[in-house]
Image (cartoon, rainbow, N blue to C red; front, side, top):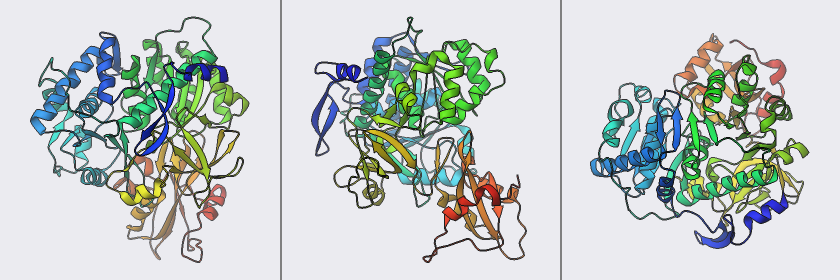
Length: 551
């Protein structure tokens, strides 16, 4: 491993690392890199008529077709809507070719793509629009309908009806030539905030290109450490992650264009059998995603009926993998066992900071890997001082992939990024000779199937119910999802409530993954400390025995 890394990082190599000044601070960077995302797109022209992506509805696009459609859409956004550098273009929809084209068209103009959460309900959509003030909204009909007929106060391109006018605006045109700086914002992606309102994490062109560097380095290192016994099939990734997440956008939509690789995209609710069918039909070589999806694929009753021998690697992120999941992957996908990897990162650092490779996972199945090149990793105490190996504290990240801040939220930015550039992740863990181990998540956060959920947003909704006196939301363990949402509810005197009624109340206002899977009713007040805060550790300690499943 060490020899492979040294060769890849040596002076003159494709992954040579140097020291440069970035936003007023000297840091390690890859010296050979694209200056911005439009340059990445321009370089994709060399892949020509090779297939770039295919969707499960039958639509397929080559690199050349994609480039032409993006150039036309960019011209339309500029000519029809006046979009220019620094303007925002909001994208709200299910995974689709139109989503990807709209993203690339936006960043090619030097404008900022706003990836809105496709699971949001009306109030959440409205909040995202008000926060980012886009010049235009590109959305599908299903999401627009959630606004209950209230037209958003922004020019709107409906994907099903009007997107063709963008891609047909100027066929054969060249990409825009507006100047773009490395540290110009490229995209805003939303992450939950402790206040309950989503925060818009800004990723710059530099951030995303730094991600490409560490991602491609990881792939090259894996190929050197565990070279295939026979020439591998052409790379093709199966993508089920949503485009409004870094796992779908950075790791797939951007990385595939940059690498010249092919990808196959699923749409709609996750369907494990569809993944197996597409794997057989399309020769998928890589699966990636949250543990929930991987479990469902591996445990599907028809798993052995499909040919999945093409799968050469399995990867994931967002949380560590259980030793049991690792064992099952090795057992059921032996061809992929040497290229299994788990990354740790978050939206605020453009997706990836550490990587646990197969050899690391075999030695220590609970690890989250080592810091990737150009990434600095530290464990901080509550005062912000670095802790020694073995001591648990807050994980902090520094490097060219760290965001400049949250959109229009200086208070949250100041809380997240220290004066000397460390991103305080809110996750807790420790280092052991450079190897990261996660100890816990930000105290109250729930991670359900890779989705970060902050309880206060759900609690605020429950507090609005006329028959609820008080409520608290905690996470309970779930084998596939990691955690599920549980609401502990104290009804008002004389009120009659059911779990279904509580769940519907949340469903009416929030995205489906925030709806409690379990509801526990209590007649006694919730346990609180002297300052009035609910003692959630008491609630979670009782979770296995005390809650009532009324589902």
